[in-house]
Length: 128
Image (cartoon, rainbow, N blue to C red; front, side, top):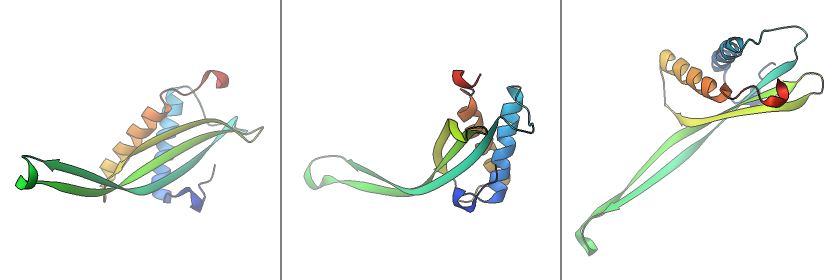
């Protein structure tokens, strides 16, 4: 299914995700066909996470401190839509910390790993 602007991902990333999904589904003997039994919709979101860690030692005024870090957490959602009924049949999700500016190899490896883990339990019994 086409990736709408509201999906929250750029076309290059969407293409990498689509390729990873195709590899995983092909490994499970699913093939592209027309008309399709199901379509796949992608959604992505991200939010800033603030992590506060406090530490101390001794008693009273002897010491301690607080470390505050922020990072982006991304969530990828893959929906399998029944093309006859247009209803959601299965949803996979993955979350993780996002590197600020990953190189192409790192980004591809992260996507491949997330999609592989997400689709490991696919298909559910109702879709077999």
